[in-house]
Amino acid sequence: MKGERLRRTRALVRRSAWPGWIWAVPIAAFGVVGWLGVQALLHGGETVTIVLDQAYGIKADETDVTLRGVKIGEVSKVALDADGKHVDVEAKIDRTRKDDLRSGTRFYVLGAKADLSNPASLKALISGPEIVMEPGLGAPTRHFTGADRRPALAPQHPPTVNYVVRFTGAVGGLKTGADVELRGFRVGTVTSVRLRYDAASGTLSTPVEIALEPGQLGIAGVAPPADGNWRPSVDAMLRHLIGDGLRARLAQDPPLVGSSKVKLDFVHGAPQATLAEENGVLVIPGVESADIDDMTAKADQIITRIDQLPIKETGDKVRDTVARIDALVASPRIDDSLKHIDRSLAQIDRTLADVSPQIAPLVAQLRATANAADDAAAAASRTLNGDATSQNNLQDVLRELTDAARSIRVLADYLDRHPEALIRGRQGASQ
Image (tube, rainbow, N blue to C red; front, top):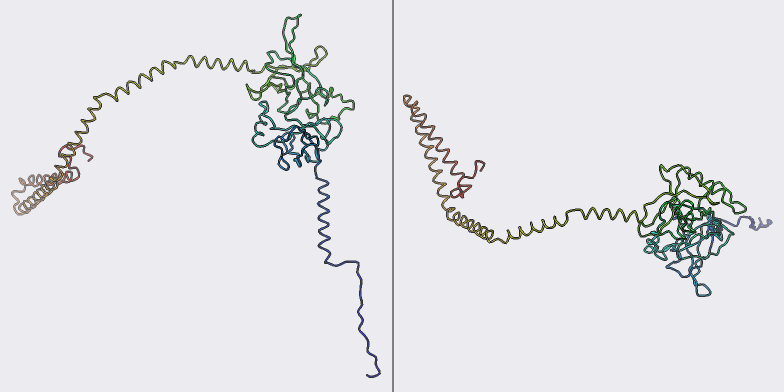
């Protein structure tokens, strides 16, 4: 043992490329953050700036941006412009609407001002404003000039296609800049309303010129023309729809008090028509509408019928009947009759009060008499049992005694229940 050398213990260090499980948590955290960043880039919104004259109650993270009533974005910042005369509103628009952010796209504040022609603006005044986007054509941009109400269509920008509508009657209060709607969607604007006299035929007409915006018509499957000429596509669309009954008519929204507009509606049973050309312009056929003059005439008819009702005569009869009732109520005879009834009732109450104490002895006496009659009948019956020769003559007497006793008991019971019968008499068999 002394000659052997002791060996030292040696620790071996092994190095690994894996840093250890302790680093798993921060690596996972970095991965999640990276994934969220990628998702934000893929699904985040496009930032646009809308310049307005004032804020109109718009608030960051509260005011929505909508397209045809559907939310497509939200206001992220509201700040005063550098010149101090305008307000810059920044909004995040969904990336799916990126292609709509062009120079022809318009933004306006719904609810900034009351507009009777647009009931939604009245609702927005209470619930809070929203920014409405109307897509248009043009070059891509992220800077827009907004308006405090829905702007009219510009005749040249964005591109429009012009038509004429001929109405058979008066055009009422239709003004330049009025809306043209198709199934509730605004697709154009009125560009001219004028009066025309045809000397050859001696007729008056009121041709209404309208400008339809192809971008609002939703023509699918047709690529935008390189030269910007949409007329062939829009003409083809209108020819097909007019063949199916599409007609132009005047309307007011809200009725009677709203602004006049042109509506393109399908009319059931409309006569055959087409997109005709007159003097170099295409004419959309129109139909008569229930304008304010027709409504006023109907209202006059209703008022005339009301005037024909015998309202005055009926009122006179009602007043006469009421006067008679008042005279009857105020008559002294009625008052005397009521007093007499009160006195009679008081007399009856006093009589009942005097009679009531005597009822109990009377009833007891009647019941005693009935018992005596029963005893007499029983004694006679025992006597008859011992004398057969007298049975034939006394049977009737016993029966009468028994009936008399029963009648006396009934009378006693009735007086016990109805003591007033001594004064008023028996009121009915049911009692």
